[in-house]
Amino acid sequence: MPLVEYRRKRHFNRTAEPAGKTVKRKSDRRLSYVIQKHAATRLHYDFRLELDGVLKSWAVPKGPSFDPGEKRLAVEVEDHPIEYATFEGSIPEGEYGAGEVIVWDRGTWLPVGDPHDGLKKGRLEFDLDGKKLHGRWILVRIAGRERSNKPNWLLIKRHDDFARPLKEYDVETAEPRSVKSGRELEELAENTFAEDKWTRRGLQKAVKRRRTAAKAAASNGKAATASKKTVKKKSAARGRKKSTASRRD
Ligand code: MN
View 1: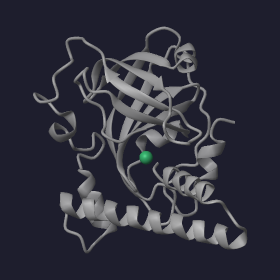
View 2: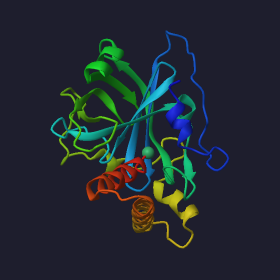
View 3: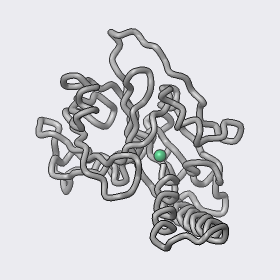
View 4: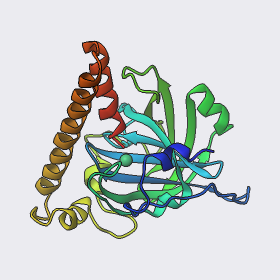
């Protein structure tokens, strides 16, 4: 039942995202990975590794870096269907994860050791062979600071021939385009927000608007709860924090 949470959050009659199914694949096949750039409430990169017929997923706010000194926060999110790897487009306003998505990178991944052990122990090491990312990487689980039910990880580049200092090479700015369509995220944003020009600023405006809307929705939710029964300030704040976090994907 690995896709229950994924399906619960979405209305497939309103979003073009796939409902998906768990897929059985030949065991000798190389495992795929995909990174999607997503202009939701917060701009982030969704890092997804195929395992056991689904895509294990993390939201990486700053995206990956080839610099081994850069430890990039990677928030674990729900498993996604394999079919999600080709999804590129706009998730409509009001739906979970509303905003534009492009396929920023894709390729195959090879775990170092048993990936199930790695996930359990919180140290998942692997090689990536993609269009943009290469070489050895590691995901390390850390103690979460947020009151979320999903753990936080760090995505770190290992030292190898592909490693490069950030000031010399920043893959996010050097390679902004979709590997599927060649488009930038801003081009999709133009379709969603016709009033905004096809610019970075237009996209930033769209992201800001979503963040404001999410905050407003969260405080409305808080007001509704408070009117029903007397809620301690502390738990209301916690509820607000949770609902903001749940919109982040
Ligand atoms: Mn996302």
